[in-house]
Image (cartoon, rainbow, N blue to C red; front, top):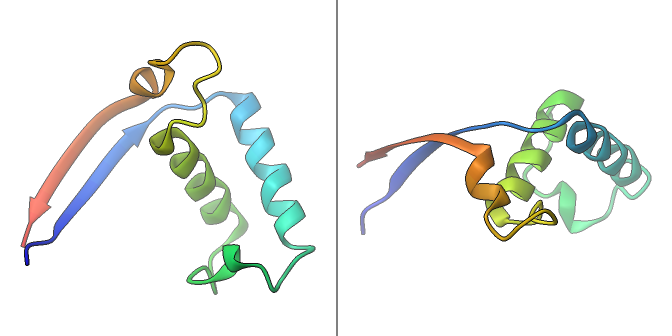
Length: 81
């Protein structure tokens, strides 16, 4: 089985950042949620940026048009092993 490591360069708005801050803040009130699996030891900023990346790459920020996420993904590079 092959694996691919992919790196994305994305853009995001101040509004998206502030919503991610609120999301992470809310998740801190729920320490037993599945959200926390694999996130032990990450800083707030890592959690915030990871949440934004997840939303952009999952297409959740497409309220403007179906292609909004594609506009926010600026670059992608891959490395196979």
